[in-house]
View: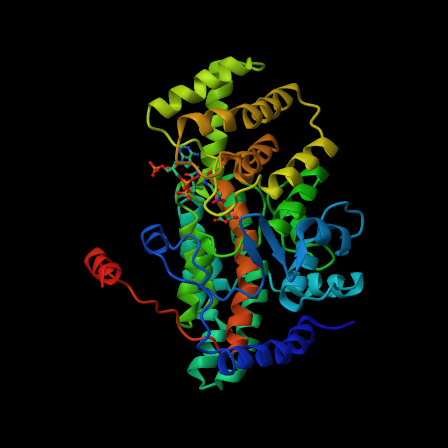
Length: 435
Ligand code: NMX
Ligand code: MLT
């Protein structure tokens, strides 16, 4: 079996050769005409960022040419699991190769062994009051841990630029363990759960579940495996783009992933996960367990009349239903809850998802995609497993952080420069179109 270092090393020469070809033979070739709309509209539709770990478009995301469904079918699963494995997915993102089960096992054990904190970091963590928001604690811990960055030490030691990716990968693997570890520690502290070390014989999802006292809930462990596998990357979404920008200046990986978590705190992006839980619980308490379609529509219509955004609906890029939502629904179908309250909550959301798009199409004229996105359901399932809303952002950030690290390693291996686009004022824009 290969190690992850060998798998990444094997991929670099062909990608570097392609980069060299693009930058010599095609250097000045135009690929897109920039319109005023591209500039005025948050760069929507402007293909201008090199992104190696996925191809994202209005119809969905693929990774190294494979859809999530194809990856689900071809990546090895953790023994005893029916769901995707985050470790296998990571291996694929890093190397564009399907790992063997043995490679995944060795990789998972390597990651688990990295899940410990230096004593002074543990001491600092213990001083953080429990009533600080989980994401704030995790952000503080990540910036504290930046002092242990191997990437930073390598730069300080005068490492050659060509070798930098190796240290980016070292930090990435440390963080793949430490990010969920920090989230788990924060949860365990708030819920007075005894600390549990990561076991090298277990995978990330199971180790995380042990930390938060949920390892006996197999459905929760399976759901964690699934979500952490397919939320790793969705192209240049706010969290990933924030990490990309910051890391392009060689900011070390710990602070980089803290930036991604900060990016997720916006209600238009990942805070929508928790907002959606709140919104659906509000609907449940107002409408009861089994409202009619008319009652649902009146409820949502009133929210729109109050000027509210409906969390979990719409998308900045997708123009078709979010494929991740279908995966979540399938999980629910194969792992139904026996609790009648949970059942009512989740079926209310399903009814909402069916009824609301028509209303949004009618009421929010400019809305380009009225369909529910994955955030209409992902946090609600976790709520059903008893995860409080204030941990939802951190839960999904575990996946996004480890996913982006694969992009960061690729960026450093290709020696990509710091991001620095040109900006222009509206007066300059007008002058350009009138000239
Ligand atoms: N509820 C109410 N109004 C909406 C919604 C919504 N769910 N979605 C879009 N609109 C409005 C939007 O505010 C805009 O209004 P205006 O013209 O007055 O500025 C108009 O519809 C056109 O928006 P779009 O061009 O369709 O969407 P845009 O690319 O600007 O934004 C989102 C995309 C995702 C930010 C937006 O659909 C939204 O706010 N959705 C709700 C929040 C959410 O679920 N976010 C999570 C997205 C997924 N994620 O993981 O990040
Ligand atoms: C994501 O997964 O980050 C969201 O779908 C948002 C996006 O892609 O813009």
